[in-house]
Image 1: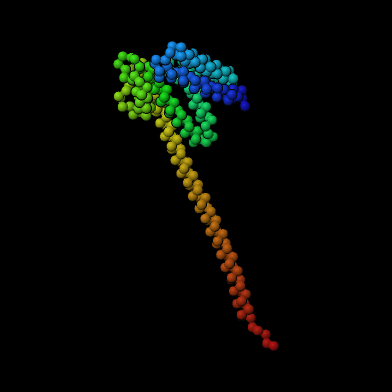
Image 2 (image 1 turned 180 degrees about the vertical axis):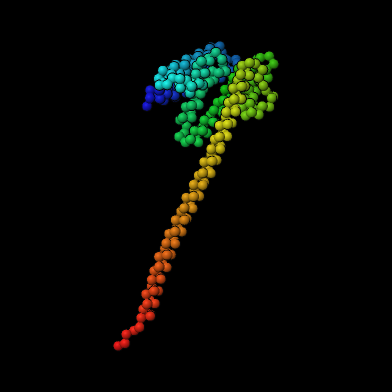
Amino acid sequence: MTRLLRWERSTEWPLAVVAGLFLVAYAWPILDPHLLYSLRAGCGAIVYIAWALFALDYLVRLVLAEHRLDFIGHHLLDLASVALPVLRPLRLLRLVALVRVLNRKATTSLHGRVAVYISSSAVLVIFVAALAELDAERGKSGANIQTFGDALWWALTTVTTVGYGDRFPVTRDGRLVAVGLMLAGIALIGVVTAAIASWLIASVREAETDTQEALHRQIGELRAELAEIKLILTAHSTTFGVESVIARTPRQKR
């Protein structure tokens, strides 16, 4: 086991806890705009502490990596989560660590891991996108997303590519969140479609395997029965041949 792998395994759960605390600290002031100043300041401190811890983790992993350029190329989301702290909506990329831990620890089955990854990613993306959109739009001139319910409805219709148009962003940050959510929705739909197709193909193959095994078993049973019948016929033909020979043999005169 490499040093990088040991570090990642030893820090994945602590970072997941940090990501969870970050989500609470990010969401609380948004859901409660009348939060006390001291609590709001505490939440802000937690957000920046979480950023510092994720930045430290990324730097340590980069140092421990054998091929650093390959590491950077395969961890672009982690790089973005620590390199873009000034863009408030993009801070939510730090929650990738939480999804990664849930996906790794939930189940050992491939289909199970895909299901956990899709469901957890979808719920998390919709929730944090609604938070980010509400944070960007509430109180702005001409904005029609003023409550978390409005933001959640907008996130659901956007991520599913329905887009009723009754709720839409009007600010720059809100539109940036919308672009990210649309891309995430397209990616999630693609993953869901691929997962369903893979499950159907696996089910068909499993049914074909069961059918072939049953057919081979029946053929084996038929062969055994034919062999048994052959033995019986051979035994009967041998018996009949001996009796016919005895019948044709003339009896000796006394």
